[in-house]
Length: 59
Image (tube, helix red, strand yellow):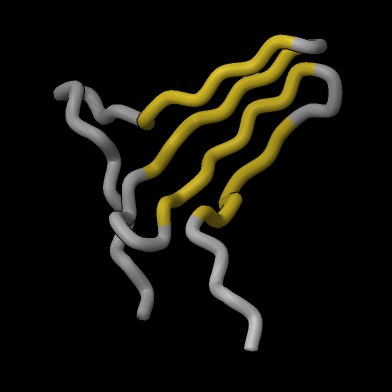
């Protein structure tokens, strides 16, 4: 039986300049990943109040 992946990609845009949104399937926290060339970074996605965006967890 295959193990469920912890992170799921829910959005992707671009090829050279890539922007993706990943959701942690255990906590529901959304993360933004951006890469340009050989550089990239990952950070929690924040709402207007500066709080992390949390998606409902599907069991």
